[in-house]
Length: 203
Image (tube, rainbow, N blue to C red):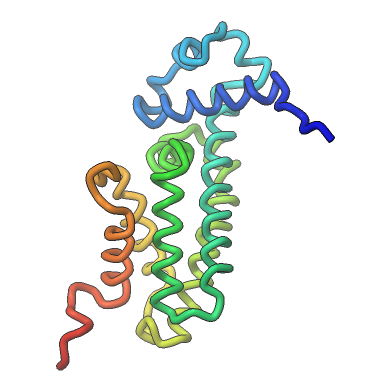
C-alpha cells in the first residue's frame, strides 16, 4: 500500500510556520513582517493569507506547536521514569524541557521569548494551554514533595515558577554548540533539590 505524500497545502503551511518561527525568534514579533516571512518562504506576502488569516493567527499557531512539543516531552519523560527515584524523575523532566527548547527548532524558544509581548488576543488564546503545561509541573513537584525530595513546606507554585523560569531564561545565554545539555540539566536538577550546598558532604 502506497504511503500518501504530504499535500502541497500542508507543506506550504509548514514552511511558513518554520520560517516565521525562526524570524520571530531572531528579530522579534514586530520586526518580522509578513513580507519578510514571505520572502524567506519564497512566496508573495498575500499568499500567506491563504494559510493564515493574520500575523496574529500565525504566531498563535507557532506558540501552540511549541507548547505541544513541551507537553509531549513531559509525558515521555513521565513514562520513561515511572516508579524511578525522585531525583531521577526530576532530572528526566528537566532534560526533556531543555531538549524541547534546544532540539526541536525555534517553536519552543519563540514561545519563551515572544509570549509576553504577543498581542493580547494571542496571549488569551494561548494561556489555557500554557497553564495546562505548568499544571503538569505542579503535580510533579507535589509528588516529589510527598516523596521527601523537597522540603515539606515547599511553596510548590513558587518553586515551579523558579524552575521553569530558570530553564527558559537559559535561551538567552546558553549555547548548546559549546555546552552540554546533559550537564546543564544535571546542574539545574541538583540546584533545585539541594541549592548550592554539596549533597555528598556530611554535616
